[in-house]
Length: 236
View 1 (cartoon, rainbow, N blue to C red):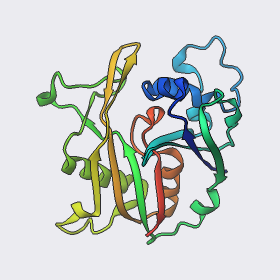
View 2 (cartoon, rainbow, N blue to C red):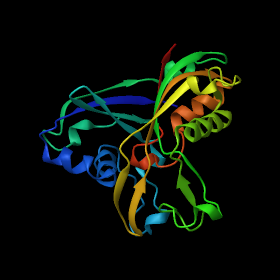
View 3 (cartoon, one colour):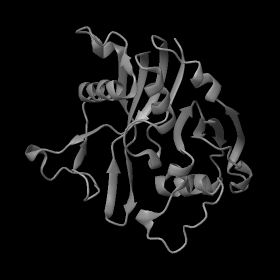
C-alpha cells in the first residue's frame, strides 16, 4: 500500500485557517475536499457513508514549530493541496513514506511523537463524567493523569507491535512523556464534545513489525477524524 506524508505550513493570517483551527470538524472537511470524491454516497444516511478518513486512511496532526503552525497529513493516496482555499498554506508538500515503513524490523528502536486521545471505559465511579459517545459502544472517559496515559500507551503498544523502551523496569515512565495539549471542544449533533489531548514523546522498541506498520498506517487510539492517532517516528 502506498503512503504519503504531507507537511502544510499554515498561514496564521488566513480567516479560513483560523476558522478550521477553532473547529476540528471543519478542518477535517477542508482536508477531505483535497482527496478524490467517493462515488455512490448520495442518498445514504451519514452513518453508512464511506468517508475519506476510512477510504484513504486520512490522518492528521497539528504541531506548533516556534511561530509556525504545521499541519501533517498522512494518506494512502496523494492529496491535491491546490484545492485548499487560496492563502490557506504558506507551503504544502508531500512525500512517499511506505518504503520507510517497509524497512522497519523487529527490535528497531525509534523515537516517536504522537498526539492522542487516551480514554478508558467508564465505571460506576465515573458516572456523570462521560464524554460524547456512540450509544452502540460502551461509554468512555478521558484519562487525565500522566501515569494513566503512559499505561494507556503501553497497552496500545501490546496491540500495535511495540513497547516503550525500558517498559519492563519499575522506572518505565521515563520511556515516554505525556504532556497535556489543548483539549478539543466543538459542537456535535448530540451536543458539545470535549476530547482530552495528550502529546506523547519518547523511545519505543518494535516487537512485531507487521502489526506496527499497520498501526502507523491506520493510526493509534480514538478520535482520528479530529487530529489524533498519527505517530511520527525517527531512528533513535
